[in-house]
Image 1 (cartoon, rainbow, N blue to C red):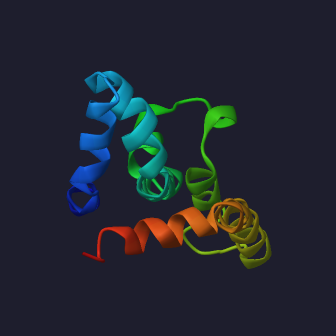
Image 2 (cartoon, rainbow, N blue to C red; image 1 turned 45 degrees about the vertical axis):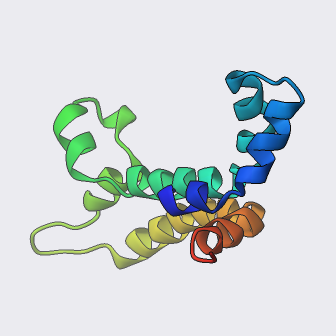
Length: 119
């Protein structure tokens, strides 16, 4: 994110200041619209990390009805028997939601990844 914000041209801020905009108005009308791709990318990467988390929900949640998908899929792996059909069906369902989210936000994700790299 640092590289992205450094790559924003200073002329945009100068022009907004000449138009008598205060710092909050500059942030709201200049910086925030330009930073949508990078903010979307960071949000998506954090969502994927939280979605795939196993240890923390397993430690915190006691009720089986509140378990996350990652923790629930672990119940299909016993000590001697693994229920492969249910396990892979759960993996597909778990992946489809993230894949759908990626397809909907793909242009923001790709432009957010490349925005800080070009100087």
